[in-house]
Length: 65
Image (cartoon, rainbow, N blue to C red; front, side, top):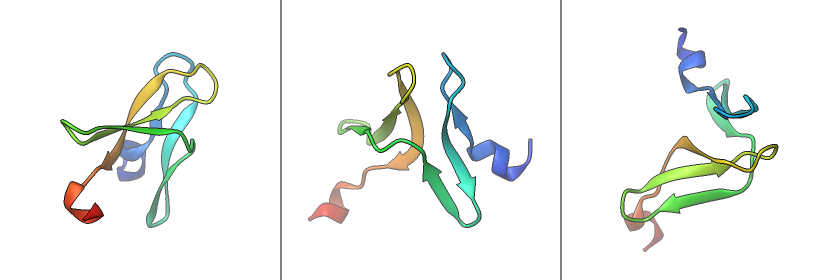
């Protein structure tokens, strides 16, 4: 798969595109995000079927202080 395709994330249940690369940006197509503070893994909620999907964002606690 090409570099751009590696960053695309689709919902595994309904196949709606959640995240995609657009030029030099990574676009998360849904504004509802959740972060697990223990692991710093981010999830985006699918607008169609409402399942949570892991996206390529990391929460950095030191950036908020």
